[in-house]
Image (cartoon, one colour):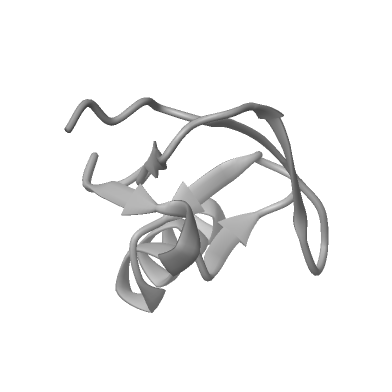
Length: 64
């Protein structure tokens, strides 16, 4: 099965699919996140995160 990377526009409680695809990449780990499993993102940075761990890492790095 060929998977295609999606392009999304992140909003505060949802996201819009700008280009159809199956997954996005985590901005911290580079792991693939299937769209159905996507729960964490940053609206201001327009980044997706694999889990709360990666989201917290980004938050901490911005606080420095």
